[in-house]
Image 1 (tube, rainbow, N blue to C red):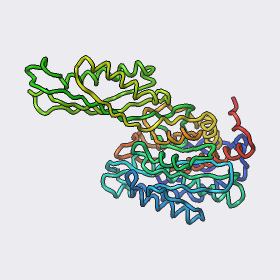
Image 2: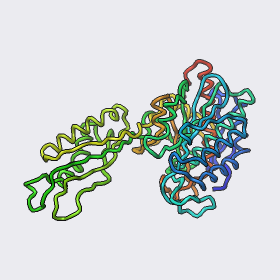
Image 3: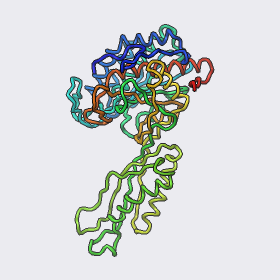
Length: 432
């Protein structure tokens, strides 16, 4: 974890890479200064990440984390602003237009950190097991290097740094940021997300939905109750719950375009307390997921129609509590290509792969719904280790060389987007 990132012009696997910046439309000197800054400050960014990792905070309680980011930005002469809700912040780098935004998330998960490292969580029951500490260090580093370029007159526009609170709590702090107008006027928004399934030095991206919408559904059934000896004289609530649990996912999937377009999975069922009593109430709770924005908008009504069809013959009264969660993160084609070119420019052509769509959700979807944007999967697996510990694992950790790679990728992407917009041009299409 302590090895420095690969030097400029090389991959983490030792293969030489010839840097190729010309197709980004970005001045060679700005790219060189970016790489020099990252090489000089990489150890600081790793230390900052470890500081956050040791002091994780839950959603909308990220006071220490917010203070740490604001302090470091202020030291660099920037003017960060805390969100009105109390945690999270934003900060502008440079002046004028065009405007490009980059986003990080600050919160940790309610779980234990059991790995044996000096920076293990000191807060019981709270852990950075999703990589948000890495995302924060990457966006902080991106902001600092862009500020260095701005002071040298090499930043052709303005960059808004967004440090989102409460990403892990539906619907996420992104809602507050969008409603506050923090993306108004931005031509693009970019982000990275740790991916422990791919090796450090590799980036994963795709055009279109890269994550799914994720909603909470709660179905409540009621009836008169009765004796299990005489189910014919009442409404058998447990049987009705079973019908919903088995039939609703199948029926909804059929009507929403197939299993590739919608998933309804129940995770909990509660009813009754005695073997010889038919209960008067039962509750099913689960999640509904889809990568399709139109399907997400239609899902509540379609689910109601399915439940009515399933439950009307049972005689049970029912209600549906459908909590809108997050929309899918839909990568804009031009923005995704910018990120891919940025990564290939220093990691090599084969270092950027097409990643699979995830059925998980991310509140960054609110931002890509408001502004054309994309996020890229940042490879964090150390190829020298056999373990591929997934996100939310109690021993989750990253190869910290990924931090420098994330900074260099986001900085190049921001610069290309600003240059293209300043010139009044659409971002160039990739060769081939």
